[in-house]
Image (cartoon, rainbow, N blue to C red):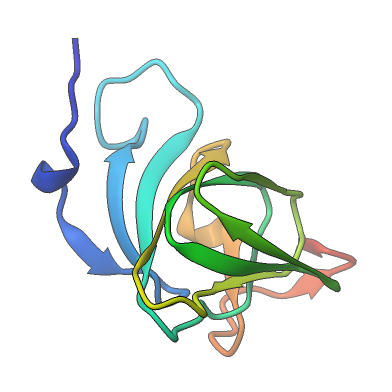
Length: 132
């Protein structure tokens, strides 16, 4: 049995400027899963950098309120909202509220640096929503 406590996971600033703690990743533990699970925080008044993944992603909002941007769509979100982000979509989330915006990120298949492009970082070349 694996029990992973958020407080035991190291905190770091992700490429999109969110504060991240990686809970589960098949490359970092002996797990029979194909997805990765992370906890993200966006501080009040902040916004993640626009980015896109080659893979699908789901955000599950735990606390706070935010404004989710996926391509040309925008939606207000809050606790108990699940947001599906299709592969190749440009996404970012902003926190217009007075408290931290906290959410889980589920990436399937598991997140890999080579599968992500962050605006302004120029990591990969994209063509029609997919990396070359």
